[in-house]
Image (tube, rainbow, N blue to C red; front, side):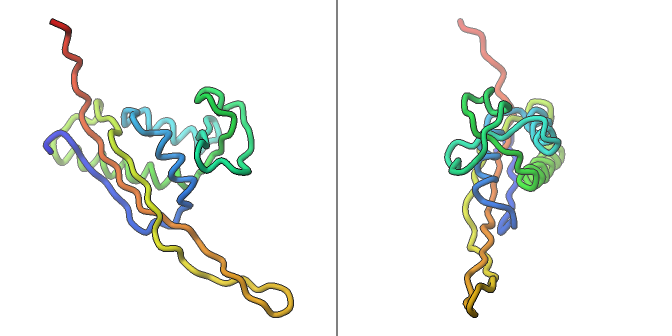
Length: 150
């Protein structure tokens, strides 16, 4: 539509689970807030709350603001998401939208086919050494102005 901009990346070599949790954390934020938050994650100033893929994830006080105890700082996921947000922002400028009131309306992270490597074990055995890449798509929309009640 005229008020929405999209950005997507396919077969991105960044952990699916970390990226999914980071994506959920920025859903619903304004573009500026999402970018500031991800920059803070890169500097270990604010944590990403881990809700679904939380097995074995350590606890941190920074996750308390989200009502959970487990959180991490997935720097690579934050960098990839920042790159996609920047792409969406430039798409918005090309469309002539004001970037100040853009909101992350839709964000989806899917698993991509794993990339295979091998690791060598004792007694001449070989085990798989897989990476878990992902596809990410983001839609930003201009925030609707609140209509006063009649």
